[in-house]
Amino acid sequence: METNASVEFFDGQFKLQVTRSELELNSFEKAALPFVSGSLLDFGCGLGNLALSAARRGSPVLALDASATAVDHVRTVARNERLPVRAERVDLRHYTTAESFDSVVSIGLLMFFDCATAWRQLDLLMSLVKPGGVAAINVLTQGTTFMGMFSAQGHCLFEQGELSRRFAGWDVLVDEGSIFPGPRETTKMFDTVIARRRG
Ligand SMILES: C[S@@+](CC[C@H](N)C(=O)[O-])C[C@H]1O[C@@H](n2cnc3c(N)ncnc32)[C@H](O)[C@@H]1O
Image (cartoon, rainbow, N blue to C red; front, top):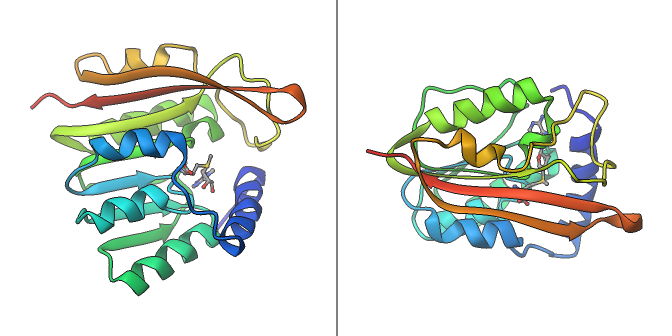
């Protein structure tokens, strides 16, 4: 599978985290988990902390990422705990499926695509949510000055508020901006939207 600098950056980080057993849900995953029920697509699952937590609560999960370390880890934990998780290593810039889900989560992924690809894949994710189901999406926004994770293949900093505008016609349950310090006095700015598709 073709890979890129962003995926290699995370793959290296995940190797260290697995070795050190640093497997806590991050703050965005913690915020999204209470809204997850039924079948789950975790699009850019990383180490699968959210995907595995949802599976432990009974959700059948499809967990997708391009990092070999991440996908191997999710598969190993799922096999050991006999969890209903399918984990696949795929390039999510080109991924498509006809399956639909009760919950679709994508935390910290779409900004690693060029904007045309990010918006196309966001449209795909929204289309995969069953009526009455929930989408939880988190992206980096303009104002972010930490650029070290991006690859030469492009990236996309969403305009602030753009994510929630794209959920027009959905019931928006959470619409939140947040700001975190990055390395060397840089800044990471995020938008998170959690929304229910009208039935
Ligand atoms: C910021 S991490 C987020 C992981 C996880 N959702 C979390 O919250 O911890 C970004 C993830 O996107 C994945 N990724 C980046 N570009 C990708 C691509 N083109 N296809 C699939 N996964 C990709 C990385 O491997 C990494 O796991």
